[in-house]
Amino acid sequence: MVVTMKINIKNVSHTYDIEVLHDLTFNLEGKKAVALLGQSGSGKSTLLRMMAGLEKPTKGEITVNDLKVDNPDYKDYVGFVFQFHNLFPHLTLERNISLILEKTRGIEKEKAKKTAVDNLSFLGLGDQVHKLPKNVSGGQAQRASIARALSMNPDIIFLDEPTSSLDPILTDDVLSAVEDLRDSGKDFVFVTHVLSFVRDFADYIVFMHEGNIVEHGDTSILDNPKSEAMQSYMNKVR
Amino acid sequence: MATLPSESSARRQINKYVSYFASVLLILGFLLLVIQRQRTPLDFTRLSGFLGLFRQGFVNTIIVSVIALIGSMITGFILYLMTKSKVQFFRAFSDVFTEVIYGTPLLVMIMVNAYLIGPAFNIFNRPVMGVLAIIVYITPYMSNIYKSAFSAITEEQYMAMDLFRFTPTQKYAYIIFPQVVRILTPPLMNNFSLIIKGSALLNVLSFRELFYSYRIFQSDTFQTSVGLIFMWGLYIIITIPLSQFIRYFERRWSLQ
Image (cartoon, rainbow over all chains, first blue to last red; front, top):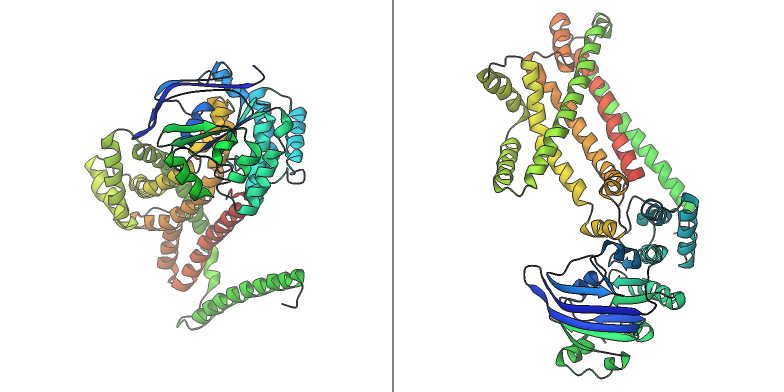
C-alpha cells in the first residue's frame, strides 16, 4: 500500500428507507487526519462505515489507497473504533485482541498475547488486561477498543464518534489517547462533535449536510464557514 | 459514617447471614407449629416401607422433566425460528400459538392433550401425551429465551466479526456460541425448575411421578401430613439448589 492516504469516492448513493447519501463524488490525497463533521442524520457515519468497508453503498464505488473497499483484503488495512466500544463482552481486554490475531491473522499464541498486552499498555491499560469489558470504565473500554484497532496494524484507523457515550472527563481521556497516536504512522478518518479535538488533531475537514458534502478544506474553514448549514452547525456545537 | 469501609461491609455481611438464618428459622418454626397443631399425631416411621415408592417417583419426576426440557428446547427453537421467519404465515402462526398457550392453564393443557387430542389420533399412552403437553406448554417460554439470547449479540458485533475476517465457523465457535450459552443458561434452568414443579400435575394421568407416589402413600397409610411434608421436601431438594446455581451462574458469568 502507498504511504499517504488516498480516498476516492465516485457517484456514491445510499438508501436505507430513504436516501441518506446523494450521488457523492469526492477525492482526497495526502491527508493524515480527516474529520467528518455534520449534524446527526447528515450521513457522515454512513459514509465512514462505507469507507471502512463495513457497509456497501447502494450505488457507486469507493477506493481507498487504490484498493476497492469491497475487496476482502482491504479489511486487513483497516482499523475501526465504534461509537460504543464494541468489545466482545465475554472476552478479557487482552483476549479481545489476541483471539483475533491468533485465529484470523495466524499469529502464534505467545506473540499474539504480547502484541495485545503491549498495545493495551501503550494506551494506559497495562494493569487491566485480564478484566472483562463490563469491569472497566467506558473510557477504558474505548481505549481498549483503540488498542484493538491498532493491534491489527492497519494503515488507516476509522473512528465513529468514539466518545459519544462518554462523560467529558472520559472523553478527554480517550481523545488524548488518540492524539498520542499522531506519530504512529497511521492515518485517521473520524466522526466527532468535539471541536477542540478536531482543531488539535485534524488536518482536513469535511462538512456534511443532508447527505451531501457541503464544505471541505483545512481547519481554517472551522472559523470561516461559508454555507448556512455549517454556520448553523458551528453555532450549535460551540 | 465514622466506621471504616471494610468494617461496615463486614458488618453488612454478618447482618445478611443473620437475616437469612432468621428467615429460615421463621419458616421452619411455622412448619413445626402447623405440625404440632395436627389432630392426628404424625408417624414418620410409616415412611419406611414406602421409600422405594418415593424414590421411583423422584427419579421419574427428574426423568420426565429432563425429557420435557430437552424437547421444549428443540420445539422452542423451532418456534423462535418461525417468529423470525420471512414467511408471514409462520410469524402469524407463532403469534396465535403463543397466545393460545399463554391463555391455557397447564393442568388443562395436560388433560386436553391426554383425553382429547391423543385419543383423536389413537394415542392412548397418557404419560407420553402428558409429557408432550408440558413440552408444548413450555415452548413459547423457550422461544422467548432464544430471542433475548440472540438479540444480545448486536449488529455492531457482527460488523466487527466481519471486519476482523472471522470465518462463519469461527464466528459461532469463538464469539456467538460462548455468549449465547452464558445468556441462555440461567433462564433455561429457571424453566427447568418450572417444568419440575409443573410435572406434579401429571399425577392426574396416574403417571408415577413424585406427587403420585404421595397419593399412593396417603391412601395406604392415611398419613396425609407425613406424606405432604416428605414430598414437599423432595421437591425443595431439587428446586432450591437449582435456583442457587442460577444465581451463582449469573454472578459469575453474566456479561452485563
